[in-house]
Length: 224
Length: 224
Image (cartoon, rainbow over all chains, first blue to last red; front, side, top):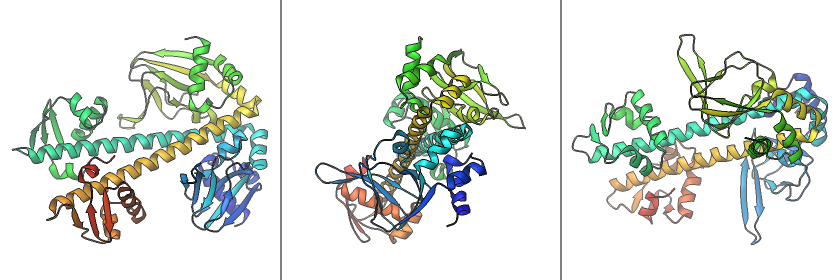
């Protein structure tokens, strides 16, 4: 892998996505490629960080050994993910060990390279903070949308279950008020309302107080 | 709200969680509290950032108006969340407007305060990068565990459905191989295997090739 391929990997990594080509190039000069076969150790608990890592290929397990000698896996790193930043930036020692669970290729962004560029170029700091913040917001949005998705699936399951037990499967009565139903389904009342609105906007149900008309059973069953 | 309460809010915010008290104090001196009643506008699309915002109370809607005049909500900010960092750090203009949907209290961390401390104290940079990176990893872990949770619920639903259709509800035959079942359930084969292992470790099922014995139906039904 030559310097231009490394530069490409770095600029594709979210943390450096806002950096300019000249800044990426400086950084690329301060990296080291490390190949580790499956089962190898990248660092041990208590080691000092020589930099932080970007996994290019393979899989890395971060773990600790309990006082009883049991292994506890803290995280599995997949290609494209980084690890060790917090330890590096805080100049602490690693609280976990890192072992490969597959043959792996890792890019070490050395301490010298990253600290040098952070200390000497104020725009690098701002661009990195911007990129990481944007990524954080994206992750929070993803979690919100997965949660809404879950809530929706939970309500749909419940409606289909009442519908199956109902003399008229397309027109059903909620057996309690929305506060109680929300609580039964482990949703907040606001989430229940948002989910009902979502299904009714999609043309799948009509809500009139406690009465619910399922206007499209197949659609409701298959709603994603 | 006095300066010490503001300092407390700042140090409770993930981005500043690693800063030292003296650094928090400097930052607190460069903040401004803004109260906006429901329906008010904090900034418009195209505005330059005077800083970035931490929502203390209320709710903020970030949105755009389409060329057809329709509103599209991009995100809802909840108390404890920040917004506007990326725009500030990149010195761009806001691509969205921000309106309150509830009476809101916002802490503006001014451009001058944050840039001053970033430019003049290299440890602030490192501590902020550490905190944001750690938070990022936490969010990625959360997404992974929610996804595993979802996958587990999907497999449980499927097993209970086969069980209901089976002459012996506690001993069932998977109607296809695991590759096909994984694909039907929209899971990767690896995820299906992990989820089956999870349920069998929990003492709820036993897996012998295509035969599955449900050893604890109630437990399976209520597994979270």
